[in-house]
Amino acid sequence: MRALCVLLLPVLGLLVASKSSCPMDEAVDEKIQGSISSLIFAAMQNIRLDCKTVTSRGNLATCPAGHAVTGCTCGSACGSWDVRAETTCHCQCAGMDWTGARCCRLQAA
Image 1: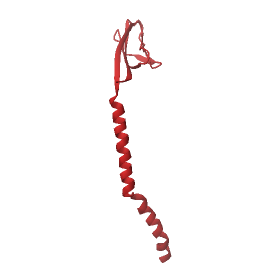
Image 2: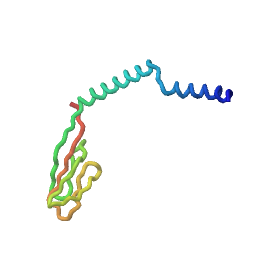
Image 3: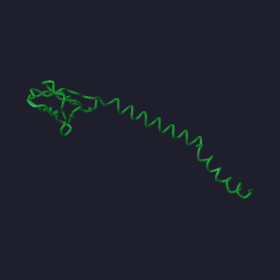
Image 4: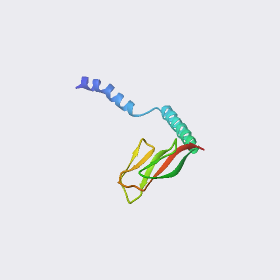
């Protein structure tokens, strides 16, 4: 029994030691996390979302270069549409009179 206790004591010590961090490590981790957060926030302040709506006759509406489709709308009460190549709205109903695309891009301010 005494030998078992002697063998388990180092294992218990490793388990306890692995759960707690050194105060210096914790301080460094907090400093790094704070710096990363402020860098991300600063970068996001200089980016804005630039959006426009494009409408076309027929069943296709294509976004301008550099923009991506964020939503589509169809005439004739059609609710079936899909996005092609991330830049074009396609209304799937027959006899479509018009199609609209909401197009957005990220832009540096």
